[in-house]
Length: 359
Image (cartoon, rainbow, N blue to C red; front, top):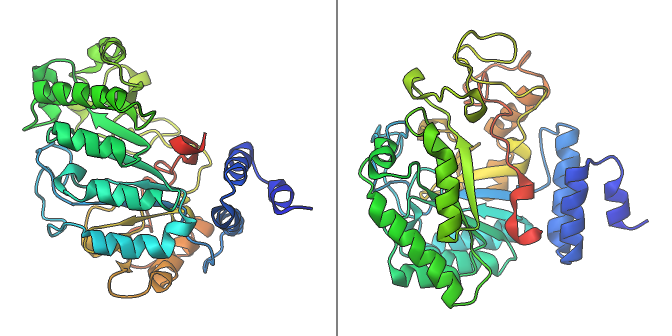
């Protein structure tokens, strides 16, 4: 029995699809690691041998906008400003790149503020890693557009939450709607000029109450502009007045809580555990490691990969406690750990089927 045939036993359709994709591309090391991680996750192993196959890494952790629900935009001081150097990025990728399936180049900051972003993407592509950038696209130049297309980037998500300057700027405070739309056109044009199939360009429309009436028109405008996809995204919102009235466009319930909702009306996934401590990792530009993409404060991080070997961080007591917490359903684990009593457990798991270059 081959490894592929053995791995397929007991795995779900999503896992089988990933295994088939990795096998087809002959990415043996990534395939072996993926299977190992899935097996260790299924057993809820506390100490793991597998490497994370999904990386979120911030080229910078600051931004040019002042979005009202973002700790970076509101300058809450959660993290000290930092820029990831190419040399430090290379050290990270040299160690875990052979096992990675995907990299997100963004978390708390605007990635185009790091001028070495295209070089980082190129380096990651050498390890056959699916790559994605999320951006507000206010800072793009035509030269940047050419570099990003030629870098081999697989997917770019552009955040534009409105079809007029008024609705756009309600959330993207400090952004220039007309400039962003111009830049999006430049990116689409440059991709065509260079005759490249990538990056796959998604216009992401984050839905709030003030812009929910523009959703269908945004889809039409995006199609006319030539983007590959317009993604309508439900927002996690801190204020009730911003929650869309249409519950189909919302993560929240308007009236009453009922079963399946948190105390603030947030919809809860049914029977879903958090997969982050086995599958994925978030790295900040100063080397600090967060257990998932939603950890706002550096004091809640789990270690620093510029100060100690990655394997030591990946299996330190904080990670082991997080895995115990998930395994024991929060009944027998206490301690100072951001994962303990997490209210969003299972809500923000990664979607590995979104890896554009695999399919």
